[in-house]
Length: 241
Image (cartoon, rainbow, N blue to C red; front, top):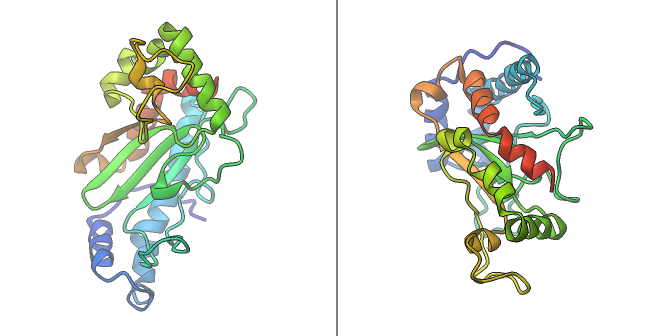
């Protein structure tokens, strides 16, 4: 487990992932595992440690843990035609903590969602060639939580707008959106509702691309903390569902 201060990702990290994309097999990776640990695994763990410190200092209720936050680097190939053993990016999730200090979750869903999506409610970071992002939200929320979200959209739209259209959040991330949506508004809800699009949502997410300057800076933990702070109205709303 890393405990060292985060000093930034190095360009070699991206280069290693690019090469892995062209040589995604165990024999190739075995010869470069030390580089993976040096350029990717250890910096990501250090990032989690530093982010946890920033959250504590600023009173931001997120769980950033070098052991639990990083996503698995090894792909689950059991139900996939693609048997490539490794992901070509690294990432981590940072659960939003409720008033009781416990992570906000969605039922019994696993921590690591398909394609590194978010389960429960929390922040997200991904680092890979051509896509380095900070984001968050609620992926695969479960039927009951999703039903509560849709009822609020239908009957308390001002409360939903206050969270999802918060000016500080929109400046940081733009609009929240859904990774998956129904084709039609669910039965029992008004199809002509002004927020009918949100009634069809099956999840709530938001993402911002990071510049190379942000991604490779030792100040990356501060950048992530600033982003999650801007999204607090959304995290609080989702936690209330």
